[in-house]
Length: 122
Length: 381
Figure (cartoon, rainbow over the protein chains, first blue to last red):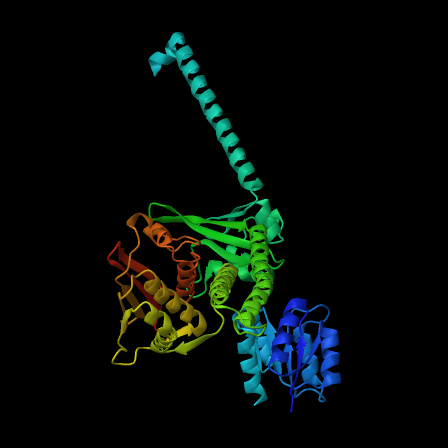
């Protein structure tokens, strides 16, 4: 079964790169450019994993995560934070809100992100 | 006396002399008053708050800035006991700095920071005035540093925001290069692979630099340490040595580390930051020691501290630059000539982290012979 990944990322180029990598690795990819539409997409498409950026136009990633975890319909969808924030407070806040992992974009290659996805998808 | 009284000439002389003395005294009195007025005017108009206490710790002089700071009026303030002043609701934060609660005494301080109720920041200095061995009173100065704090905060925030923003394009470069190297967009030839590999490393250096800058901005915000846990320093050291295995192998270094036979006393540290300290010191030792050199790491303890030591057989630090080695962005001349890369932030960060743990750091170094860095951490009791 092909797994579906939702990429919520406001930077066009990063979004395209990530999507391309995921498609190469034979995932089904959907994407959103801001928090509002990201949250709507989680509900609409019910992905297997969400890759979530934090600094987003409108409602930010933390809020998206908080709202998603409060909605019983989508609360159990694993969310990986993929952001360029990365201070300990941000990490603890993200994990505290229920993210399964926190990855700093600049510290991981797309391949490593895919590896992480694989372990989460089991 | 009789003679003088009977001699009008003499009397006149005496009278003239007395008048002279009186005049001089009056001049002196006037100039003393002038001086006092000048001093009062200076103290009164200082932008720093100034309070002078007498021997009984009562307010003798208080200037306008200080009166405003404590929301008093001059009349109430004069003669007031200093303890009563700092017991007022709006002076809590000053009390803890200025009063030794055990001994009910005023403490001597130098530029100790305090935040007042309306978010103003002060540096408080309190000086015991002494005449020989006799206590004459206290001089207490409240220096307003609100503006400096604000600018410092803006600067730090700027660095932090800029650093995070810089990471986005760097991520894009990193991801693109890696995907091309992985062959995700078709085959590439060896030369292209080589060039892209080098570009990737350059980009990694930029990412490291930005992480260093972020660390520095945390140092300047004064919130460097996050989560301090009781730990065994050996564990952190071993973890760092293991994770540097690749680097050690490439440069064929002989790293000599023997775990202490007995478990060392525990220390309270932010593990991640302490890892940065050991990583920095080990990386420096590797980087600035020629191939196949020796590095020796030991950890010991005395009754107060755990002491870490790392000694290399490297290029050393030139004597005339040793006093600047811990300053921000500084890199010694001999290592910049070696074309090693570095940001000049490593030892600055290292020192600040050690000091934030109430430890000390120092080194001994001789050019072309080697360097030994030491740091201590207080034992957790």
